[in-house]
Image 1 (cartoon, rainbow, N blue to C red):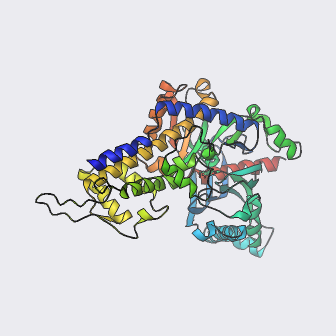
Image 2: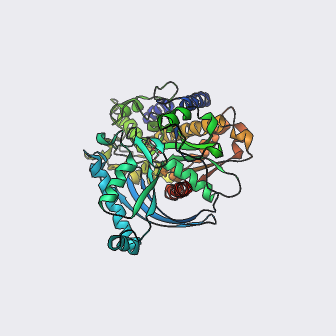
Image 3: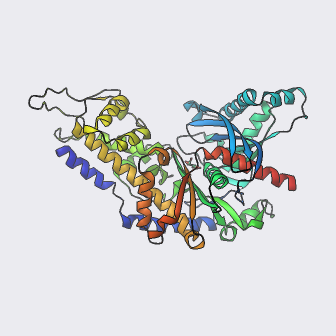
Length: 496
Ligand code: BGC
């Protein structure tokens, strides 16, 4: 029981109470509003130059690529104009070495080569005609989903502010990422024009608007996956800093201001970098210190998939190293009466001892486990962490910690969503507030949405109205969304 008591004590450190949630929402709204007024704030509130959302009647064939974390996807999307679409795609893992390459060329030429292979596989005629009779074929418009903080200055132009999610290519910072990709596409002589720069959250918002049922337009697109972030539809007049941005870019707005709307990429991963309201355990502190970007993305580091496994690993490790062997995890030496048990062993090369060794999928499996004696957790510990013959007591402790870390992440996610919903006054304006979500956490972590909803009900300004918030999965929405933005960009170009 000593282990369970110790685990309980650790779990208490991850508790994020209703009072904390409400404090969080107030600060979130304050930082959102500050971000609309000036540049260089904790929540960046980046204007995306997207000023309308689709309604499902759009048509055409578009290319989209998506760089946002572990994989790079290339797809072509055919919009049928009746809220439906078809999609062909390929996906490759981004080699680890390229995530931390010396030059931007190394990464972006890899991306262009994937586009070339995709065209050869799926649009060979187009590809060949362009090679043989240049000028005869139309260029494909491509939506580039690039899911990192970018200071956008036009629909297909934006300078990288900083890398996140383990990427770190110093040379690319400050450069226009569309220009970097176009240069490599041109070097391969491909009939492709980078027409739109899209954050995955904006893509998710667009995709959800295209496919969502009924007349209600979508307010938020949010990702809870490897990283976390949200984009939402803001009233242009509230984006106070827009005037200064327009002036810096030549004085005339290079977007359609007639809708009175602007989609804003919040980059909420950097909410409260100053840690004035975010929870902060020793595990959070240590993780941040050893990350590639200490002091930034502090919200993301408590919420998203890339980090939850690492928080858990650190918590488990500290329990494993507990000085009192009677309390420590995976140190079961008891041979119960009449029951000869093998002693728990943790292999020397166990991922438990390696930074980033635990994947979020581990948390999802353990959270889901309701088997007798947590048999599934036991097996997963063996398979994923090379822990042999963990006792049921060990598994109970692991499960308690998993639950605490996952639930805290969901409650923090509620803070961000509620912040946007309250700040935009949408519950007062509309009957239903629609939110499109994507990412491995919302999709696979058991109960994630329910924990978000539970927190919503505790928030002043939402409470019972939680029922009027509709959350829908926009699976792989960023590909479709990027195509939709490429379409908007194409149309805007034609009408100029
Ligand atoms: C990036 C965002 C992105 C989010 C989800 C974060 O790390 O900063 O731009 O939207 O991850 O992929």
